[in-house]
Length: 244
Image 1 (cartoon, rainbow, N blue to C red):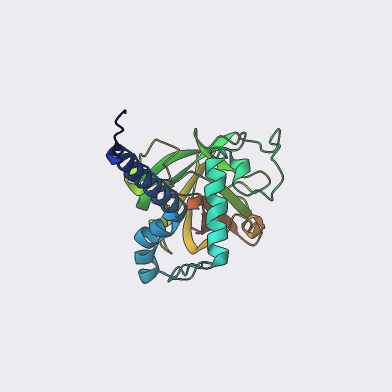
Image 2 (image 1 turned 45 degrees about the vertical axis):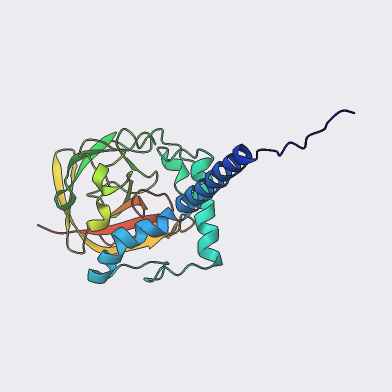
């Protein structure tokens, strides 16, 4: 009569792989959540101190309350980034606006902008294309500095510690530090114009009111993504021509 032995299955290896799988799932979930909510973290790090010392108009409460609307907006921002929306293309910054057709719109192809308080000197503003990796962009249909009207200028931003003066992908990384009264200089055809910041606003990408024109004076409107390191909202810095 044959003998049979009950061999106890060694499940140590199985338990090890199960622990590794659980750890991997936890890390993946934490990474996704961190990526989605990074704009809120960036907001608290960079904008909370600014809010404490300045008056900035914003649709986001100072306490940055997380509600369904906020989460929906964060998910949309994360989705745009993951899907590969090209934010070096100025046409993608305000999705509800029509695409630009710049041929023959302006008499000059470029001018320069200097903002001493955030380390920007003679940055080129292009009026003929939409590539934000090469220069700042003046939005089509807005007026050139020096003329009455509103010059709307787009520029990239990123985390402040990555700022490089001559790198247009980081040029407005410190724009959140601008204050009312700060100077902006525009040099157009060898003529220099001084503007002073008078209003700072944070808006959603669906808010296109910043493109409206007012002809009682000459204005510059700086537009960049915010909070730093994200594409969630738009930081709007408005400046008015100062007679010298």
